[in-house]
Amino acid sequence: MRTRLTFAATWHLPADPAAVCAEILDVEHWVVWWPQIRAVASLGPDDARVIARSALPHHLDLVLHAVCRDLPELVVGLDGDLVGEARWRLTPVPAGSRLDYHQEVTASGWLGAASRVAAPVMRWNHDRMMAGCVAGLGHRLGP
Image (cartoon, rainbow, N blue to C red; front, side, top):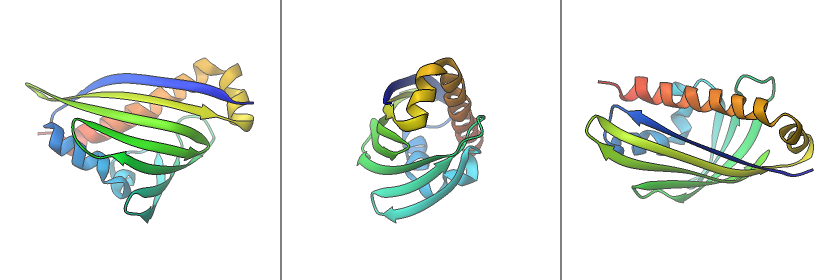
């Protein structure tokens, strides 16, 4: 069973878009500041394997491929447990940056079935994952 999932959120960070961009593009160091990222392995200049786990007792195994690294929008292709795309749009604001996040993926197999049946729980889990991202970025980039 395949289930299409869309996630979107907007956050504000206390740093200019170039600084936020640098942290997001430094995938190999996500484990330092993003608590839900358990492991990262470089697969080359544009690719990485990422193991993530949020609140639910399941690890996601993802392969990320850099599609666009140019401000104002960063785009990464996703493969593995989730297939699709994630986008970060960075906009300068007086106190730093506005970060608009949008992800469209397809989950298949048991994860796709669980996503269809327990969509609110999956959304809650994803929200916890991204809250860890934003908190980690904010702490790393703070004044």
